[in-house]
Amino acid sequence: MASPLPSNNAQYLENDYWNTRFEVEQQYDWFKDYSKFKHLLTPHLQPSNSILILGCGNSSLTQDLYEDGYKNLTSIDLSPVVIKKMQATAAAVSQGDIKWQVADMLDLPFANHTFDVVIEKGTMDVLFVDNDQPFDPRAEVKERVFQMLHETHRVLKSDGLFVSVTFAQQHFRKPFLLSQEFSWNVSVSTFGEGFHYYVYTLHKGRRTETDHPVPFGWPLRDLAAPSGIADSTMQHDHMDREDYLLSVDL
Image 1: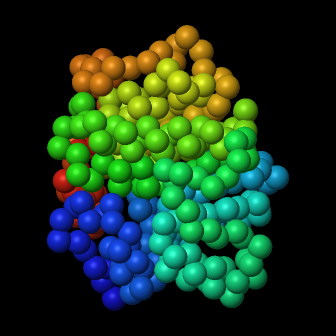
Image 2: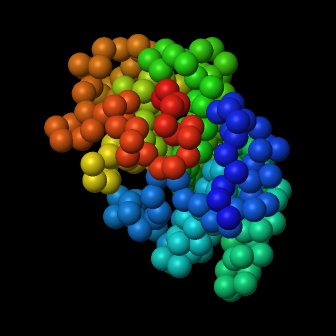
């Protein structure tokens, strides 16, 4: 059954929309599946790592990581519908020790310094769905994005890793990620053909003077896309089928 698409992009911020969608949709992966970017992720992981996945939805990412030997997994989502379904799905294939929890990434129910790794794939992008000012987002957009990043930084251990998988280029993301209150450094890799997705790896406690804060609205010429990589603002025809991905300004 096809995924129920919202009448407007702002509905992606509403829990009722996701509950309704997850009632009928069995599985969907934003920005390609784990197999397409695992080579960029697994060099940073250890089998013993405690890993938190934000906004897991019905993606196969959690179970794919489990199959690759990463057993200490906690996956959260706002939707109780999808958490219940994912618990059942995992239990049916002997992955019952994965922890699934209804939780809000803007108000994480975990103590400080709990996780070695936090991963989000497409979840942060949802926070921009009603944004109409790509280079200097409105105050309410900035507020929720920074709240998510503050919570992520808080629950990471002192040497923890945050991984963000997105189609947003550096000139859209670095003003958030390199805000001076965060102690992580920022590295960027890409994957994909034609249209490229971005994997940001941020190691807490490793920030140096080269990871300087970046102002909103900074000139694109200061951080152009690497040669041969399509600009995400110009290549929407290569995006996934979801309509907010075709029009959201990140």
